Length: 560
Ligand code: FBP
Image (cartoon, rainbow, N blue to C red):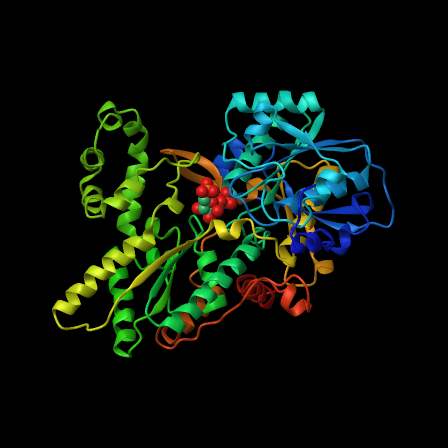
């Protein structure tokens, strides 16, 4: 028998909370339709591409006094993209709702992400299987993957697998790219009269799959609390030893929500926010100046230590870097099939070939970088054509450049301090933590609600649970048409329909909290030590959501 940790044993007993509307099961629900919807941008193009699923209304669920019966349904579920705490609970909620609706219903899990539905690799869930994973972190129940579901051949293969298993609905648990896949698959299934529905669930620790209808993606709560615990621990160490500057890169592929939230929970000396850097058009040199200035001023006060939080996606937001990376992305495909590049015997030869292919200004930027970073920028793109920013050691780039700048200042007599830096990257540490109570409840509700959407015959919808800063029984369950969140963006050099990413709003209350405090936090050590996530104890400690969600929701409520 598998040995379980004491916390694992306790968490298996946790009963996640549901919105009151869902508490009597999906057969006792009424669906209320909102008005027809439109895409966020590029409406005509999105409408043409999604002729069968575009413009549907938002929906919410209400408890109904009468109970209906529900026909037998087989459903397939896919975990897609990066791990996020709570994924297992989405599946557990889906399973419980489906069995509650009709015990003859079956739930299949496709293995290894979207490729599972294409290749027909699956498992069938039963009580024992699901019970072993309740309230646990990770995606290991069925695994995940980043295959992009978009070709005719992939759709046909998926259809054949669904037909074989008599599956009439597929739930895709993923981020913006994976839910774009969900929208494409939903449209294809309707267009080909397959009768198969597709429902998405908003997942990503990055917190960038959100909009007016989706308050937050699941996993953000647990991941940010985990990083905040680690940053807090390092702050205590730094404040004890008083000899290191810690440069901490925090995950979040593009938007800086994770770094911002972790910073608000811990109050480090420096926090960079990519969106601000882009907005102010700050060059790499000006970022170095900004950070160096704080380091020198702290040193003048006898503080040769500190904490700098750096968002993972920073490099793409620095204007000259972003332009160079986008140029590099466009030439990557041709480079990969270029014999000179492929057969180059030294990395320096590769750098030279790249510099010759890039536009002049971009070539200058590329050649100015340390070899370590130049090499990392050539690593494989992800299946969506993005640079894998988690592999680019921006924290080390900053340390190296700041060190050189401090040496210059020292030689001019403008700095007499000591700079000794440690680099960290917190990302994978937070993606599979035991879900916080918030994520355990939210995920279970999202999964449960996904089956309600299926039961009402909807397709091309994202499971939505709102009013999240209130106790769970007051949460509002419903669905949002996926096309409502879409616009056209360039991917692999081509314009494609994609779900719009939510970046940090520089005029929003969350960034403002940092802006109002950062000068104070830079010089005075206002470190907070959040400690580990608490699963048991007073609700004010265990069930509390992120500062981001609280500030965004209170602004939203104030404007109603
Ligand atoms: P998703 O958007 O798929 O949830 O993944 C987000 C993320 O965790 C990013 O924060 C990070 O840049 C990336 O995944 C890392 O991907 P990988 O797991 O492939 O290394």
